[in-house]
Length: 352
Image (cartoon, rainbow, N blue to C red; front, side):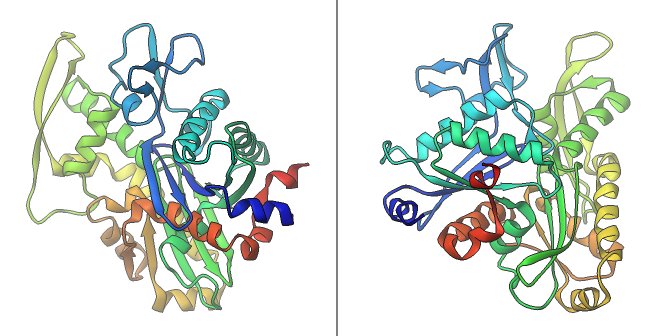
């Protein structure tokens, strides 16, 4: 272990938020150095990553291809609902990101801290450990996303008081009450940003007979989506394929109808929050009256989501500073205090 600690001074150790939609990488002392979509383009029928003149088709380059590829190319999101759905493609993606960040010291393998959903199985954890090891990590540590999000949101998680974090990502929503540096109550539900996009796609089919892609649905969510009524209704022009004629068509939609379309996934998230609160010990619940709830993850950026959760729970709700990067910043803090925290994390050594 002494040798591992010594090597740690010379390697580019990194914390990774391995998300369904985006992967963020933090380096100790440097902050976030990489933020790219979790997308890989491969040659159809193979796991061979597509090579372009500017490099491998991973991240932003691959995301631009989603829904636009010819028959010979497939753009894949290798994580679904926060867990690995395609082991080989995830390994290729991690390898690309690790080598991109570790470029200055290619011969010194890094130690890696990876945030994973709290509700994943032992088999799914093993898949993450194996993927990271084979992608070029020297040692791999796993930390639960709610803990990383709580630290990244600067909540007082080590104190004898309750802190509540709601991390709404792309594939999962993590709801946790944390006290004394551990999770006191937690629930992970596989309803999050992707389900909001799917709800918009389904609404466009039902209301307009218009087929739109994932990227268009995400754009609609970001530009006019909301959880609570807006002071002024917004409109947006949406383009897609007519389901009856099969021809390209455009239509204008309103923020009010998108808000209605998002009610189902939002209700599932709110129910998860209230269930977690109902299961909390009385003293922890009492703390939350003063401490309130903190929202993190990309889903926290949906307009009015703090208002609807506050109305449902009766608690104060605030959005963390830069909620998209909370989990990644939390992994960086774990890296900085690795000796102090590693006993609380699962690692590749635990599986030996």
